[in-house]
Image 1 (cartoon, rainbow, N blue to C red):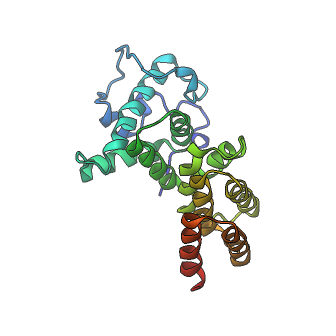
Image 2 (cartoon, helix red, strand yellow; image 1 turned 60 degrees about the vertical axis):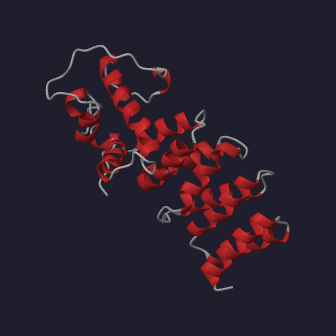
Length: 231
């Protein structure tokens, strides 16, 4: 899937209002001409990634679109979900690419709504290789955090990377989260073994974890071993 990346636009102005992705323009109801309307934004602009060369008005416009798309995440699977709404929600984030991953991770730190958290994780998975190094860097910054278990599991459903360094970093995250005292972190780490392309590495980690696992983690590990190795 094609994703618009910052490096594809050396001029640094790829997020100016008249160049915003169509899905983002449609979602915020932006006309074809550049708007001069001042927009009040509920979240702090200091937390939003800002490419060089953009103005405050550009940043406000993008932030407004992100906020609208963000609140739509909770409706992807709820009573208000529609196929068109799900498609639009996905397209907004996929069109922006790496900056979308950074923005969503920033909001995840304080998010409490389960459906929104699920929507963030699903979007991170859909961003795929664009989001992978960003998520890994975030997970490596801290000891295992219970609220980041959803990020760990989001990685589990991505296409395995071909670069050995990325695979080594993923293995490090698995080990860190398997060692966590939080069951959600342990389960997410077990799920992340799906992405390991080395069967021996995956099996060893799962079998070691199984020996000291409680009932819930043991069940997850047995399912994974059966799925991958027929055991």
